[in-house]
Each structure stands twice: as structure tokens, then as C-alpha cells.
Image (tube, rainbow over all chains, first blue to last red; front, side, top):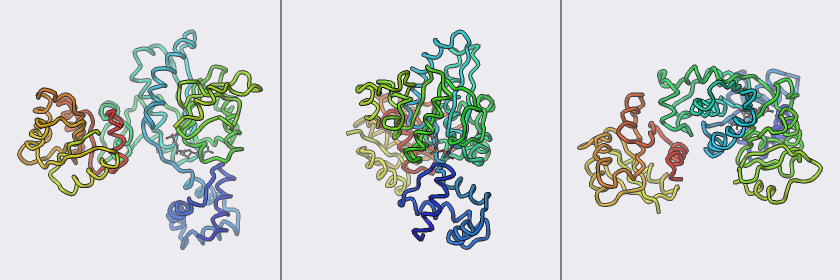
Length: 288
Length: 121
Ligand SMILES: C[S@@+](CC[C@H](N)C(=O)[O-])C[C@H]1O[C@@H](n2cnc3c(N)ncnc32)[C@H](O)[C@@H]1O
């Protein structure tokens, strides 16, 4: 790919999604945009760029962005965050929300649903302790294709083998031909909506727990700050945030600080003017 | 070093599995049927067993039942790795004492995910 074609495409994707594509992702651009070019009867990525340069083609620009907002996910990704969610975070909220018995959880880059359905499975496994509770799970993603796939809850054999314990596959999935369909009771626990993290988040409501994992890594520093500060505004003071293994708030925003000893979990900084405590900063920077 | 016994009638599959497991720092031993697998376990219990279902001499599930009744036979983590991908086979495997279940075809990511699942990584 010609360097200025690459620059054009990466500018386009960045302005629309905040996703930063480094030069080493050039091959990824080619391989993901080829099918798109063919679908539109274009000879290749060169022609696709020519068309985009020549005129404003909203649909094409959106398709390019969607093809590039890397959409890979697994059930129980990294295992540990979901153990922490079950054994540490849920007990905290069971106490602090004992009066209303309600909670809202947000999977902010839900991809094809693995993350919100993982949360739903954990809640199901803990159902005995949560009798009478109303817990909402919202999954949002910028990609309409992802949201549609998440809603359908149908996964390939390959997808159900990455992270999902076999006992949970047997318990919560049904085989349909070569695919696996998630149980209707789990589907009913999760609402999905198409939403861009760079847009105003307040219409989504407030969330006690937010999972925003493996999406900030694609954003440049200013966008990371902007998204995290947006998320802070939709959380109550005692809300908790989960980030991915390679993500942190350190050096990005002082609205959040790491929860000491709980890798990957962040809480709101009540006093943002004073920097996070040095010891908690250290434990956060050491995350993976 | 953790060890894995690879039980599969296909030499090619054994080779692919061995390569992946070596990258995950497992020392591996290969056998082609259930009977030889049982003998290997009598000599020395491995940390993990990657087990095909359809095997000559003694099938995977027969081997698993025999293993679990041996002294010390509860210890190895057993991961089925088979083309059988219907619910009935999976449930039978779990009942017989399998810790995980891999449906072929597999790749290194699946093997890694499943070994992490059973606490070996
Ligand atoms: C690598 S996946 C992460 C999925 C899941 N959270 C996980 O950790 O496995 C990244 C997802 O972020 C979505 N995404 C990218 N940019 C976004 C944006 N600006 N707003 C919302 N979602 C976005 C992509 O469509 C993709 O599904």
C-alpha cells in the first residue's frame, strides 16, 4: 500500500473511531479492506481509496471504519477479572445496594457479546445470592455488525472454545448445526445498543460497574482521556471500572485511580487535584 | 517441568500438539492408543493428558475411567481432544472425569486457553 494511501485511511479511521493504526497494521488494512472493495466491485484497496478521496461516501467510510475497529473477543477473557468481579466486586455491591437491590453493568466495547454474556453467566452462577435483585447489563459497540451478532448469540465452535469452560458450554449453550446458540435466559439478561464511545455517554444512563476492555489500546492519548472522563461522568462515586490487561488510567486521567491489590480495577478519585497515591500508582503500572 | 501425555492415533496430530505444548513449556510423551496410555500412567503420572476419543485397543473414555480408578489417577488434568462435538459425548466425558474438552480442529490459542482453564498455565 502506498504511504499516502495508508495515511489517508488511518486518518479517516482515526477521525471516526479514535482508533490509531500504526504502520505495522498496513497488512491488516489490506486484508480487511480487500473484501470490502470486492463487495463494491472495486479492483482493490487502491481504487477504494481513490473513491473515498474523490467524494464523500458516508456508507463506505463507515464500512471502512467498522472493518478496522478490531473485533476480537473471548468469553472469560483473561479469567482473573471475572474472578474478581464475582468474588470481590459483587459482594461489595450486594452490601452497598442492599436497599435498592438493583445494579447496572455496562460492557462498553461489547464486540460480539462475549464480555456481557460472560458477566451474565457469572451472575447466573451467583443467582442464589442475588434472589430478588434487578441487575441490568448493557452491551454497546460502535459496530452495527457486532451488535447484531451479539444479539443473536450464535458462536462458532472456534469461538466457544476460547475461554469458555466446557461445563458452562454444556450448561448455557445449545448446538445448532455447526454453531452454538446461547441460552435464551442469558440473552434476556443483556440489552444491546449501537454506541460510539466518543459520543455523549449520558443518554445511556448511570452504571455501577463498567467494563471497558481492550478498546482504549487503539486510541491516542487525548481520546483515551476523553473516553475515560466521559465514563467517569456516568458512574456513581462508588462505581468501579474494569480495563484490559494492557490498559491503565495512570498518566491518562486523574478521574480514576487503581484499586490497590485488584489488578485491572479502577475507582473514582474523589480528590482528582491530588495525584493518586504512589503505592496504588505503582500497583497499577505493574499490571501485566 | 510440567508434563503432558499426548494420546492420539494420528502421528500428525501428535506432532502438532507436541509442538504447541513445547512452546507452553510442557515436556511431552506420545502414545497412539488407550492401553499404552494406561501403561505410561502406571509408570509415571503426567500433569496433563491430551486425549483423543477414538483410539485403537482401548478408547479414550475407557482409558479415562480406568485412569481415574488407579491410585494417584485423580491427579492428572485430562483434556479430551476429539472430533466428537455433540453434547452427549461432552457430557459423557465430564461424567467420566474429564477436566476439559477440546473439539477438533484446534489451534495453539485453543490449547492455551484450555490449559489455562484447568489451571496448568
Ligand atoms: C478488541 S474488541 C474488545 C472486546 C471486549 N471488550 C474484550 O475485551 O474482549 C474492541 C471492540 O471495540 C469496538 N470499538 C472500537 N472503537 C469504538 C468506539 N469508538 N466506540 C465503541 N466501540 C468501539 C470494536 O468494534 C470492537 O468490537
